[in-house]
Length: 114
Length: 115
Image (cartoon, rainbow over all chains, first blue to last red; front, side, top):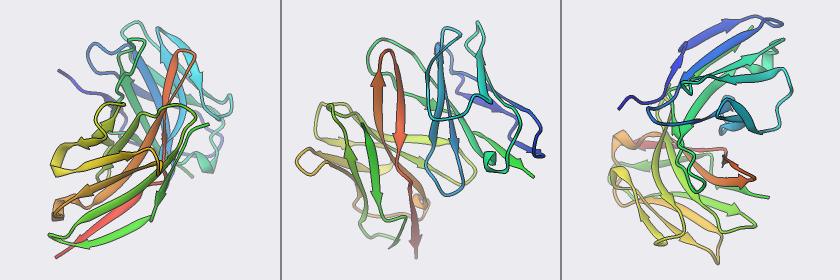
């Protein structure tokens, strides 16, 4: 069974640029959630995708957007990067069953915005 | 609304000593609670979870946590610290609404273990 993978591992961008982060969910999982973890803080929920649709969103501006593909992999896109976007971005996959569903986390992508 | 507060951003213990990491939650519904560990430059690994069954939950690596509704607490303990336990620990509560669920995390507690 393959776990959650994310790419790239590290990324450096400059202010105003756009970035795309990728996540492959664990085998059999149909739901992907994205979290932002700023330095010294706990992860903050960005949004969740289920069956290729966004079904929940945290307190993040529209320049944070995502996609989920038919194979349940996912992308996180951030436009007009700001310095405060520097963080570790975590992807978590789960199997939606209508009840409790455990989220399994990937290793994260470290984004640095200069 | 649901939230989590972790008391103490840094905890330092001696190898072999008791580890106690504190977590208090706020929830308008019966909570699902979690403890995750994060090693440097890695993602989150689930240590244990409470999902309304037994109030004393045992997890991996010798950790356990007790759910106390009267105190709204879910503290993490380990009887004897090991050097390999040095990491960042996060307490989280599940938020569920209208078909999606998310985890709400505390700010984390960094555990240092010294010889």
